[in-house]
Image (cartoon, rainbow, N blue to C red; front, top):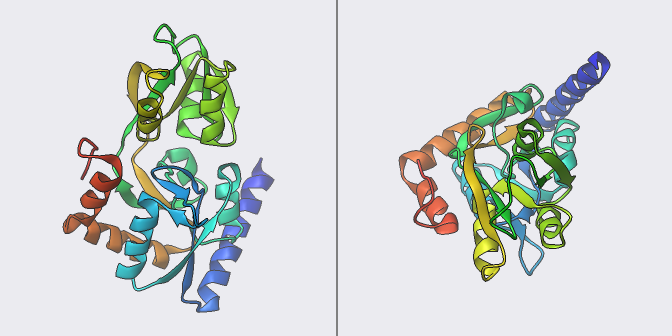
Length: 244
């Protein structure tokens, strides 16, 4: 375990030095591209969604040239640390556990509810088989709740598991589940109570990239101050969404 931690730290320092020494003006924004409306690939195969608009605006205000990179969720932190890209902007909640490995900006999305969705209103979320995406705060919550956890690599697979009967319910960000429930024509429904988890969503960066974090922090604060961030939250998540 100690060797793993030391190796991760060494990779982070090396990657951060490479970024600092390159004098490159391009910042690589890493996202999943599979978690609408936060991030997804549009019909042209380009990164789209709330975080694409936020990220582009942050780069503009920080006077940075940015490009977008997609990466599977389950390796998104290791590949940041190893230098495959420079930020994570992928609906990642700020948690103490993650903060031990990477650094975070202030949140650009406030703490929001997680929810359970099922095909029947009789599901007991405390004792049933619950699907969640691996390495998420939702998966960690289910593991500690007493329910049985079934983990999947992508959010689409968690919903499919409920529809095909592998799992009794899916537990995910409510903002992700709302359109799926609404579009199911009554087949899917919310069950149990909403659960507040995490400290909001922030950009993840290598711990060595202090200057880059400060630039993004200032840009996020600027968007909060002039209301731009709230406008984008409302645009993508609706008038009832929690704002700053």
